[in-house]
Image (cartoon, rainbow, N blue to C red; front, side, top):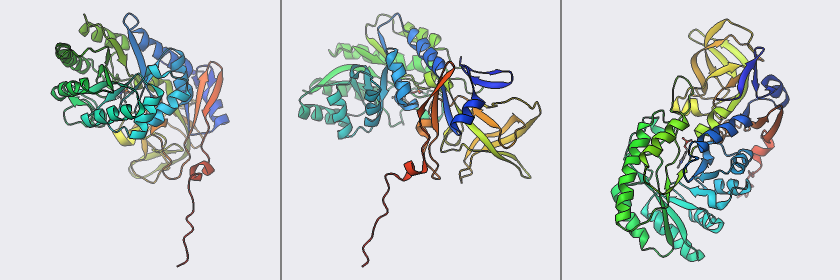
Length: 419
Ligand SMILES: *Cc1c(COP(=O)(O)O)cnc(C)c1O
């Protein structure tokens, strides 16, 4: 469910006609719907209303401060994967006791920052990291609250780049090694064991991998109990998918039901780290048609948004629905929608049936709210797009379009000596 819809053949976000917004803000530009963000957060969080839980939105899906602030104001916490994300979360007012920190490569600077802020817990991904965090906590005179990220070795049946819970993946610690690591953690002076964590992948469209992982975690919890390790938090990660095309991922309430079914008799506080399922369909990328071009084999629609703005089609072969802002033609054409970047991998859609469009028309690339702006870059020296949040009949620029000056701000022309 989202608040992007046609009225009199014009695409709207809530009460704002997107053509007007595109004219005023320019393109390319990301547009998010406040009602949709709020609704998605409530649906997910509400699905666990009857149990002790904390919804820690995954910052990397969309890390704009206004969006973090919104979820924080709704009682949400965050899952971070870097010091930069912690900085954002704190700036957006997320209380430290609602922050969990995942990721395989935390640096000393990042660990120190998180310890000083007093985050809820580190999700630790290796025994070397466990030692490093113990030692930094000792130096700073505090105790680090931790969970170990367990790799349950289940196939999430998603794109290999976003599968994270299989044996060959760099993430987490396998179950047997995790038991040893908990034993080790028990004896560390500056470590407080708080939980068990697991995140098996992203864009999952079935419930069974979540359930399989959970069954393995429950066995682990029993063994930890027998070892005298008490677990207060069970972090089940994120990963619930969204419909981009024809997929029919489980609804959050079905997901919740399946999870809660498996957890009968357990008294932990549950943590979830949803990203995509909350923001994915709450955002779109607006772009303008620059040219159309017909070659012997293809019809190209060349637009002003490229793989630097939205890399998902190039990186994962992802599908994004594309819709005109103004529906006028019923005549369709099979086209490649491509950007201005000098790479053949720069496309937003391939062999797509679209209404016939012309230079100057605008298009909406749908479901671009997650891993859209956050994965964007300045490749080809293209300033990053503006971000806009629509709420009812008002809109707010929540990130200005970068300028050419912004792009070179940190650069210096080296003055070499003459010898
Ligand atoms: C990326 C990530 C998430 C969020 O995944 P979604 O598929 O967007 O829900 C949650 N937890 C961790 C550790 C992640 O790396």
